[in-house]
Amino acid sequence: MKMLRRIVVVVVVLYIGLLAGLLAVMRRPVVFGQVMKQFPGPMFAVIPFRRLWFVARAGQLKIGDPAPGFALTTRDRKSQVELASFRGAKPVVLVFGSYT
Image (tube, rainbow, N blue to C red; front, top):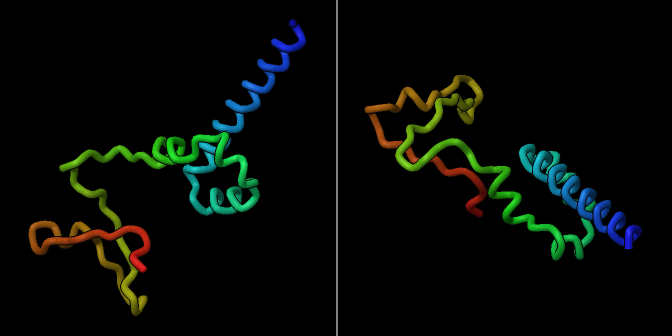
């Protein structure tokens, strides 16, 4: 019985360690993609990836908060445009992700 208990404890500790490692990797999307290529299919049934993703990628912004400032290079790569330059002048729509 003691041996079974030790095995269960070791498995639980390893599982929690795996979840913590995945959570840390999910905060770095490029690395996360490389790690996920190595995961076997059955692991998706054992690990709550969706819940971990929402925890890892949750930001600090709330609905109604102003967007954080950032600058992007123009398509011709000759200048930069700052989000703050549009404040009070024009509406701005930010689209993140793929729309293909």
